[in-house]
Image (cartoon, rainbow, N blue to C red; front, side, top):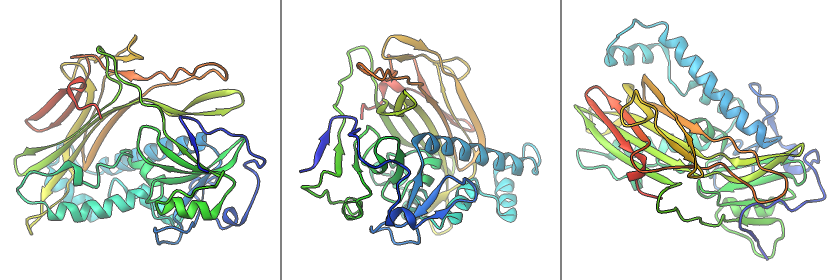
Amino acid sequence: MVLVSCESADQPQDQNADNDNSLMRRQRQSSMFNYIQSTRIESDANCENNILIFPSWRHYWETIDRLDQMVDRDCEAFDSTVPNNISEERYDILADASGFDEDNVLRRFETDLGFCSLRSKIESLETAWLDRQGDREWDANSDPDNHFIDDQAERTLLSPNAEVIVGDDRRGYVYYKFLDDEGSRIEVLNNDRDAISQVSRGRIPTGNPNVVVVRPEKESDSNKCKRKVTEYAYEISGANRLKRTSKVRPAFGTICSNNSCTSLVASRIVSKTNGYKRKKNGGWKRARLLIAAGINGQTPNVPGSAYIDCIEENNPRHFKEQKRRKVKVVVKSTTNIAPVGTPRRYNFSLQDNKLFSYHKRGNLIVNKDYYDMPGN
């Protein structure tokens, strides 16, 4: 029997997050975050350590925030060493000469733990994919960077198969494998190494009460509001190309600590711009371009309107413009869930002509209504 849950899989277990076993003993501790450890599970990801262990989901999300801050400081430190209004070409030369890369902090984190991450896997696959692209139109469905985990720091914390082990006050350490960004996941309880190995390789063992498959119920949008959209689109900018990523996602899951509960993943609005330039062999590569991303109204200097559960108006305006390979802005909801009763998740929703995803490089400007994007 495989347990299937429509949302949360909070069955209490006998052990707690302090218990140990052979899997949890094979650890390497991070020198950057002393509460993070790496270990190895039997899977198709062949490297020294292929999964990370966090004491709680609070630590997981705090690590993402702290890594983002460290990346920003590292980038700002390099930017302070180059002249203002420097050209893209000169900026690229100075960055390469100094060894600067916007992912250096994330790579140091992975190296410190001997860890092969989802980020490094996608980077390798994307490099090969870009090298095969020519003048033809690019296919968003084959782009490895269009993974459902879109945050670079979060990709750094997950295994190549989008897995992580997280401590739970009631259930002990739980293995999670995420299947999409809408809440579908597989959980393995009681540190069942055989089950973890099977799930990691894409097989769901039957007859095992330690395996829980979570598939949230699908909620349809109203005629007035949308809660979920995704669009990937490629634009030509002179001799270069851009990718626009725009997403809105509902919250899912429930995590509790000290009688306070919140969503496992918050509802979020994403706008991201990636830059690319052609290589001498005719392929393409990620490029440091002066690019911008924003979440705003009908013009970039005006706030947009998102609606919490299609009722409460929220007015986000976020803008970022930098010489980077990628620039991203995100708005997240705050969810407080009562310990009893029906949870209210505070999902962002969209109404027509109210909230726009902004992307820019030079004279190329795209400011598109999220509401007009595909609802997937």
